[in-house]
Length: 392
Ligand SMILES: Cc1ncc(COP(=O)(O)O)c(C=O)c1O
Image (cartoon, rainbow, N blue to C red; front, side):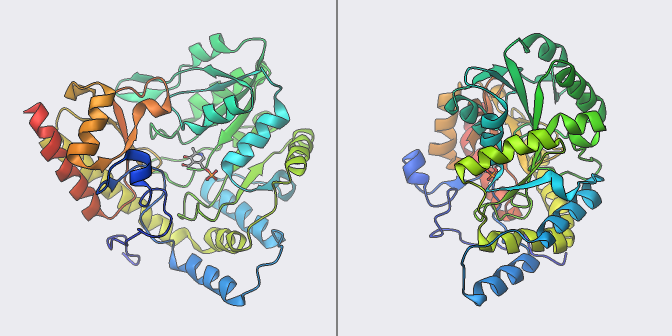
């Protein structure tokens, strides 16, 4: 490998949410954090060079995203996802969640329904509720050991006041890359029932070998016109602390309404360093990304093998996309609170609790695989020592 994913870098003292706030969030110390979705790998050297050049310039006055920024993003989306995106469809946003919040404000009214499909990235429900809209749940189901959308259920939950569906594609935390048949049916149901799709595709580049991400807006022109897509380089290249995203809106009327909200909130102003970092990522990041995906898959294989041999009561779902593996720990026979306690207190391993992601997350834990293999091995050893005592 040309890039180093094995060296563990000490992140303490960098104000890292993952590493510096354990006592505040858990009341404990000495935990190995495998929660929140950022990586313990430095950003690619190609991005670091761009950031260094920008920082060495020394002046950080107001900036705008240059045309080259949008061109780099469009070339990336076409090359990696076969999705031709016109320049005028792209609106710069401060991040995917701010983009989602602006879409909620632009396209729904207080009290209207917004569909989410739990277990799903928990800030979706938080953004819907904190903006005074109604969460409409269409839970995923497990069939043949994989998570599926319940599209018959979707037809039933959409009511008169339902205006929007927030799609998570690939889906965090169940690690699914949605196939064409599922997306086509979902798209048709939403379009014919007057439900706008807001597709969070921040994990679009993090797709395991053998799978392919399909942007729902790329299915057809009709689909494009009923979709708002949220993308960013930040998750892919571990630069989320810099911020920045793109909101892709092919329909000009919807785009104007979205831009009016961002204008009202004054929330579009970019971060000077982030602009350089994301453009470098889209232009130069591909070789690093290819190696990253192989490394993550290697970590997943280690996890799967370890669980099969040493902790067979813990099941892991297939990893199709994201670097977040969902563990089904219900076989251990503990309820969620004692399970969390056992993991934190005895194993000293800190993952995201399944119930946080809503219905269907009970008995589950989400493990972040984007760490050096030695760190993962240490976490698994700790879990075996703590949980083996229960299952023995
Ligand atoms: C599905 C999903 N959407 C959005 C985000 C956050 O995006 P941003 O930092 O651009 O707001 C995350 C981060 O984990 C995520 O997993």
